[in-house]
Amino acid sequence: QVQVVESGGGLVQPGNSLTLSCVASGFLVDRYAIGWFRQAPGKEREAVSCISSRGGNPSYADSVKGRFTVSRDSAKNTVNLQMNGLQPEDTAVYYCAAENYWWTACDLVENEYDYWGQGTRVTVSS
Image (cartoon, rainbow, N blue to C red; front, side):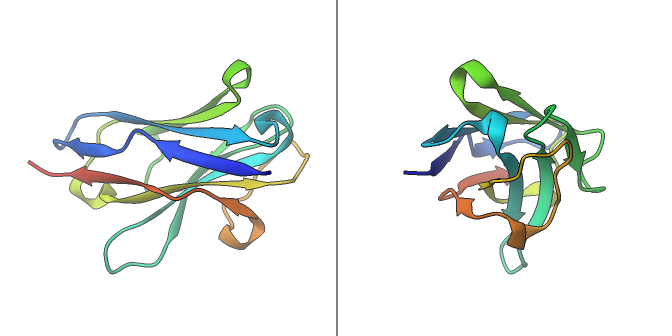
């Protein structure tokens, strides 16, 4: 059974940080591309970041470059998203997704991902 479960969301003040975690079961994160997507209220879902299966190479949306860092912990079969300098426009439900794709790069393309978590809500507000 392939499953990903996000956690770590919450309420944070602007400028502060949160780390989201995506725990995988039924597959190895080292063999799948893992993507992070988010959906703000009233907006369409958008890509945030991804990490490739082979080599763990990251990609980022322009909106989060320099602020967010995606990484994986193979021992825990977990992918993390470190979010720094959070701003109100980062408020969204964040989703982790997995793609059975063995390559050195990942794509910020929602339709490529097959397995999705339930989402974890991040609210950035003072």
